[in-house]
Amino acid sequence: MARPYWSGQLQISLVSFGIKLFPSTEVKSEIHFHQLSRKTGERIKHQKVADDDGPLGNDEIVRGYEYKKGQYVRVEPRDIENLRIPSRRTLEITQFVDRDELAPQLFEKPYFVAPERASQTAAFAVVRKALQSTRKVALGKIAFGGREHLVAVAPPTNDNELGMMAYTLRYAEELRNPAEYFADIKKVKIDEDQLELAKELIKRKSSAFAPEKFKDEYETALRKMIEAKMHHVRPPKEEAVGKSAKLVNLMDALRKSVHSDSAPRRKRVPANVPVGSARLTLVKPTKGKSKSA
Image (cartoon, rainbow, N blue to C red):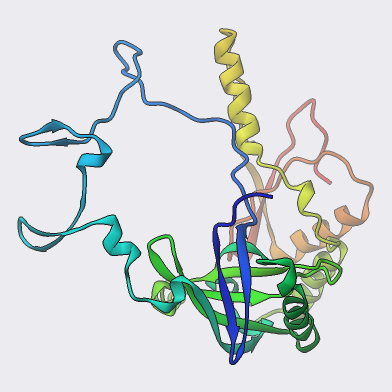
């Protein structure tokens, strides 16, 4: 098994047992770029330098906090290690909340949670089952990665999985005020017929979420471009979107959308739908391509 990212005690009142946290995500991108000199094509190297000493090795560098212009307090690694903060070793649960109370924008990064040792599995399983039964999420704080994080501990969505999940959460002061961005949106009266068509369209396009069906198409296109350059052929370009042919009102667009979604699937020219507009632009089909449904 991989080395845990964090290990310590999970404490709920007088109940305490060891847990391990493992990152539950990984970067799958295999394409990495280097910086090159446009003139020579040679790779650019970055060096850490000081005005008087020139290039420095990592063992010659220490952190510093600037408390006054040009004046610093030096902070050694051992100073960080000796910080007196309980959450470095203990995740103390201070509150339980309903799952729906945690807004999606609060979630930051997910982790797998497992018992630290086999002897602690029983206590771990009791807490997991209790969270499942009550549909609650446990909140606490934990220190790693140079800061103290707010953490939510929850049972997995699959009841058959024997572990738990932990999610680092953003603090309230890190979230921007939505009113600053939504203030210019005007209230409009909702047309009931349009609403019913929109709900029908949503219903017809609803299905069980299958995350494995979604792939990073950007990296696929990037790889094709790189391979084309390696073989000295012209890289593929994005197809130009046809010019707008006509404007129709939202009701007509919804009717056409519902009708096309009930028809057999076929390749269609995409429509350009302006967000928040009561009008929708349809793209005129070009010759040699399938018509818009």
